[in-house]
Length: 172
Image 1 (tube, rainbow, N blue to C red):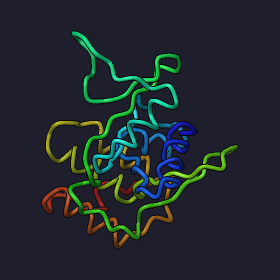
Image 2: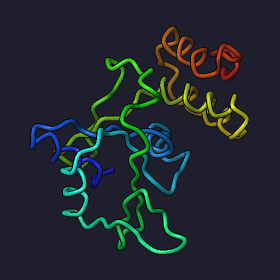
Image 3: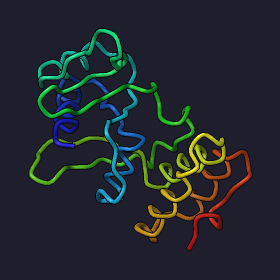
């Protein structure tokens, strides 16, 4: 998270938009590592400056057979970062719900989708039939964040699941 914050802060200092943390790394953040991931997904418009900042912090683009070719890897830390989209969740995220986070021990900040949007994302993946474990992730996140904006969460889950699921499906 600290490296992501440094990349984010460098982009901000250049007067450019900060990337937004999404996916499994956001789930790891919001679950305080109850849920874990092996890579960091982010959303960012194409910016050569982002690539420059990744390189400056020691990230490289893998190459060759069997390598993840779309992302960045830190060879020493074994961390992978990938830009998965220009905007989170096809632009369905309410920008007022994007959070600004400061990791412990850092002065740098980064943006992350809200826990509500993350739960909706998990439910969308579950509803698609591609990730049966995502409903449990959404349940864990809701249990850890009982103060979530339930009205927004209900709307977002309904949007991501084409109306098939709602908050009641993840409440304990």
